[in-house]
Length: 346
Image (cartoon, rainbow, N blue to C red):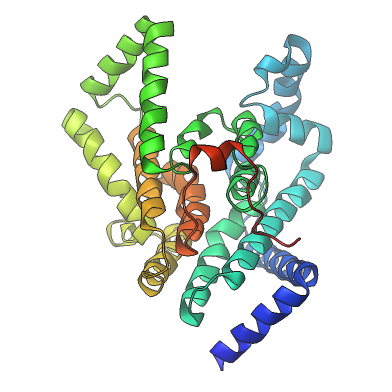
């Protein structure tokens, strides 16, 4: 029965791609609205995240810096300007719309893939995971981050979408690593290191010393966050965190170490990921899975705590993993800078 329904859906999507995409968008919007109602009923306010209050209180002043001192100050302040110019309610609506769009686009790609019925269901569970939808109905820039990464992988333009991405999160350069072929990613990292060394050897030396010293982070802990940071082990601890935290997040196994109610939605994402990887093991692009793991590892090395880490690494652990599951290969140089094949409705 499920196979028959999927076959019919694929035929409908093939015959009427725009109607199918619109249906996926409406479905995602409805789920976001239902989740919003549930959160309001249980007392999760739209400003539940500390960052949400920060964007409201500092939006005007941070945007004024950009307007007065030039657009070179825009990276890292783009979302402040969005909140300042659109207001809180309109920004929330825009955030939800972006998440609905990315959900619809990824659903379209998954349905048209060659995945089996069960693999499709597991992957859709990853796309519509509660925590991902939760981020879309709060005043956070995560919706924009996911939007630009999703467009860069599944839409036209490729690497071009990474330019506005860095305006919202300058550290998003880390995401680049998981988008290119493994050898190309290694070449980009090596070229970047050489460039920094040549242009500013002092900064390069300082960075190397800080990394080798290890244990440099001021960790921020939530009361429910019991995931080990290995902070007391210097460089070895930092490397252990970079190696283990991606596994904890992608698999959801961190819930065993920190069984907190607020962590269960994130752990559920990991459960869907494990099932999807197993079911799609013959169709999955394992090179991209490895790149996602490496990207998450780099973020773990510099993250201020596991709770914050989940948000920074979540775009890779979801969108990057969906791309891997449908067999989408990382970019070669020509694919990144040339025309990107559209995976969405035409």
